[in-house]
Image (tube, rainbow, N blue to C red; front, side, top):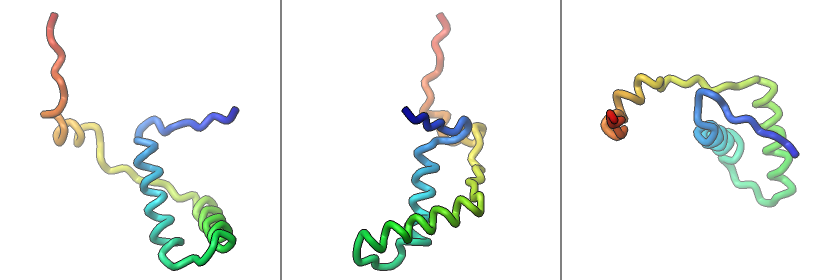
Length: 79
């Protein structure tokens, strides 16, 4: 069994979408004719990105979310 821990302060799905976007723009922005060429190209891109220790800098805070999405929250009922 292999465990994959999700980030504590961000959505893991958002992070995956961001990485796929980078992969698409930086590696898959050209025609790759077959799987035998695609796999090493993606592996080389991934290795370079990991060696650079690239991270995602989040700028949307919980307070920003409260301002933007507060009207969608269900208020707690006093019982």
